[in-house]
Image (spheres, rainbow, N blue to C red):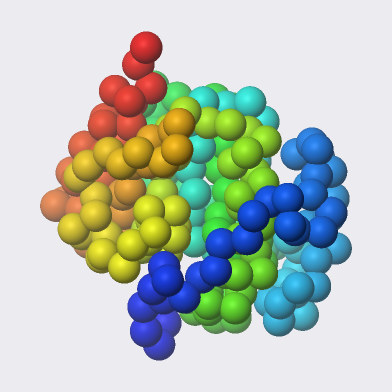
Length: 207
């Protein structure tokens, strides 16, 4: 995704879950609420809400940026070429399939023309992501790309400097890495670095 400028973490206000109207007690209820959401302008152009997929009790969660055209059509995250690469690397470096993790995005509706999500759109969608994390309760969160990494790490540091380490996130850990689309564009070096990040995440999952 490309946009006008970076979105700084400080621009995205974090709402407490207990102050958000309609806090859901189950992932299914939250998905139902999200399916009818009109809190930002992205709702006007979507085909479907791309809420997330995978094991609702997974110890591993991936968080991307936003749906693309194929995701918008199918209603599932990471089902295009980026998703195929994520599946490949997840299996080769972590020995896992999608049914052993949960995959979601920062925003649940496709930005027009695959542009970057804007601050107001991220603000509107953040309570959904926060509740997903609370309900799934993963031990390790792998953020895919600049937006999800900066948002959850609460930093404006670029992804190339942010990746390569593990960060505490409450009683969880955060492992930032590249978005698979960036790896497809970037070639061998970014591929090797993303592989290393996934190995890092696998080690963090070890007892």
